[in-house]
Image 1 (cartoon, rainbow, N blue to C red):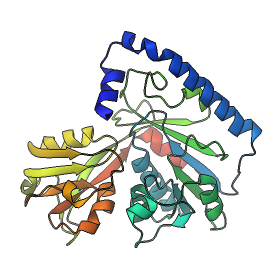
Image 2: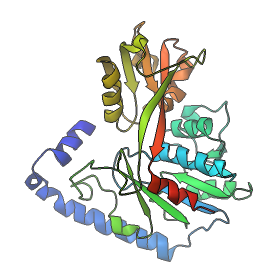
Image 3: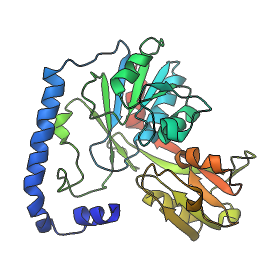
Length: 316
């Protein structure tokens, strides 16, 4: 389904989108009324803690969670106490739950588990971001980061970071004519950050494979290690295109199996093979319960440019 939508938005001539324009107009009026209502009519919650919102305008993956991980660790290195809030998407969570090492993906969400495992932050998951924020208000924190919280206007915020893939789309139209959830002018005070970006003109970053790790004996390998020359890539992330390209730059014989973002794996989804099965850190939070011994974790590092680094350095 996602490939069909991608084809319609990015491959078909724009003239074929004309019949959808009235729907995009209705969508725009709807979100405009919603934003006005939530911003100016209903009372918005203001936390006593500095609130940082990380989000994107487009449908699909843009690098929000890797950025949130990096940001939390940067602030922690500045001796700040950090809380992170996740929506627990495609999990059973309702009331705010603080993530522990024993938490499970179906209970709190795969991204919440990843955020907990890769930072020193207090991570909370629930389907209500206001309640999650209140849950953290008495934790003596310096910052609360909302991963993927841009459209939650019930919350006042001190900072907004909007992550956009660099040169990812020539279609700048609103849903359903294009991939935009909201127009850019909805967020006049936001800091726009490019992901998959190797330049220096704008704040941005890119991610790269740093190592491949066995979760069972903690042995680590370089991405070009010959043991992975024939292997399987199993993913359930929003966009695995760059990851596939990077892996195939090291190993030509990679067989890929892609599921929709946040897919809850079952045993039959895992390739029946003795060859290495490569998975992302986020996906391993759901796959670890199967205890498949030939699974290896692809660990990625985020590389910020100077403009982005300086923005975070100015945080007090």
